[in-house]
Amino acid sequence: MSYYDSLETRLPREREAWLMARLPQQVAHAKRKSPYFRRLFAEQAPESVTSRAALASLPLTRKSDLTELQRAQPPFGGLTATPLAELARVFASPGPIYDPQGRGQDCWRFARVLYAAGFRAGELVHNTFSYHFTPAGFMLEGAAQKLGCPVFPAGVGQTDLQVQAIADLRPVAYVGTPSFLRIIIDRADELGADVGSLQKAVVSGEPLPPALRKLFSDRGVVVRQAYATADVGVIAYETTSDEGLLVEEDVLLEIVRPGTGDPVAEGEVGEVVVTSFNADYPLIRFATGDLSALLPGGSSCGRTNVRIKGWLGRADQTTKVKGMFVRPSQVAAIVARHAPIGVARLVVDNPGGDDRMTLHCAVAVPSGELMAAVVDSIRDLTKLRGEVVFHAPGALPNDGKVIEDLREYS
Image (cartoon, rainbow, N blue to C red; front, side, top):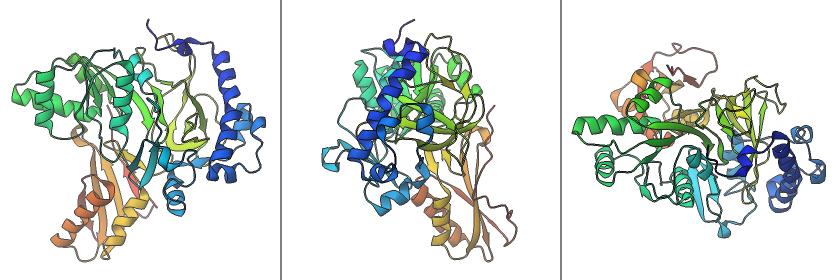
């Protein structure tokens, strides 16, 4: 078995001691350099934060609050520890939420993930993550280059050109969403093109159903998942064991009861909370809004870090569609643009395995013109395509739901 470095096979107690030794330093750094954390941790002495119990006493910072924090104190809500002028890039995710990139190499720590998936120096990587607005394309490119892998920066869309590039350049590895990999394979079949050079892939941004994993395996592509966010970078990833997701070495992870900051027992589903040791963006007790649970025991791959079950849903109504977060605030903004809409409910499903968004609107006097305008607003505010269905006033459920996720994975 080959490992990225010796950190992966440490005794768990050694890793925990290493994390706890770094924790007070990161809290002190955040208080010294970040106006937000200076205020948030005003009553906390950094030198006292040397245990998980002490960490659990610190307040959470919720991802769902970043948009308002950044509006109040642009561009980053005072959370960054590095001035804007000293950053390498700035990205925007829906919300909008602005995310900084420091000048270090592979600052999102994806190289470890690619190595665990079998990527090796010299192998061409076909990168279909977006290079526009969001950081995913750069996340994977920087990691591949750190491993010594050349990268074809394909980005999203243009399926026929993607197929042609794979057929011509013969890349061994793919990075992107699983749904787009399937689209590429299906289109190659239609065109009679050979994309059989692909042997391995790291996918993220959306779930990987077992049936889709098998489809890839049947085509000779071994696919591993990574769980990451634009704010934190990699949180956990799959290895050869296929036994949950292994927590990344440079992450301090907690599972807490939704709506609180209280850690839950092993195996209990709760919200994923992450403390990052990123010097530029020192997110401490960052509540992602994602649900997961710790798995007992160790991984058969030989790596000794803790594992989580993977993504088990959202702690709030925010959901992820085709790798993009969709929030209740965005649905409210759509409704606010169109006075005839009384209430609306965004339903996400996946007929045939493809994610679909449908905005159900209560409207007294429906019209084709209004429908077209609402479709445009969905695209404008979520950066995703959506359908619209009109209902009579009072016909939608009165249960407080703004977003309903009905996707099924088999």
